[in-house]
Image (cartoon, rainbow, N blue to C red):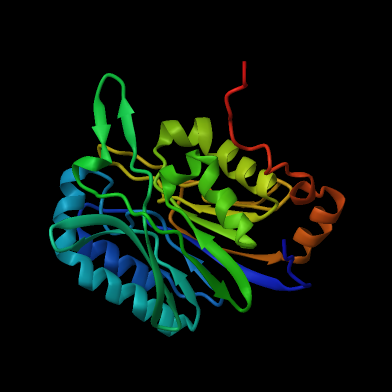
Length: 272
């Protein structure tokens, strides 16, 4: 495992107050996304409510949404991890995150694990989206970063695979609802940071009144699983500087990657 030399990076989290009207959400990020950070991270589905009908309709605004992210990256001269939007290619719709560096697209990521919930009501993202199959990484001022989307964080394998590719920070645009945020949000972010010894930044929409309600609390966690910054329910932007030397210090003290027994991480039937 490579570890970063002493370096700092400023990360901005943008909690968008998602409205039913896509143009209003596009205008909001244009008016409120200005900052001086090295990287800006938006929430999942920042341009429309997290409701299947609304997400299907928002496809018609995909070009305007992408252009707004590109303009923001160019204006701020920074990397923008553009949350996610519904994005259609042919007859297929993806839950897609576009990433720009100073106005140029450098990569994009389609959500791999589509949420399914079975309770009094049954809900599935598969009614709208097709899952992606490709991991992506990118660099911000020489710092290697990875991206996952919302429900992806519930599975340990994706973040571990990205960590094995030497990312130092995981970006997680998300749209956890009020109930699941209170139960699982902090636990999952802190666990993924701690077990991989990386920074993890999860960004949620601010408190919104729709069928699907989110309530903010975007969070930046250090490699020791400690919360560096947590926002409240309100819309807005929060900037935090991280020191990448924390990773090398922690990995020297707690050398998880040297102790891992990857030779054993496959179940095999015992011979009788």
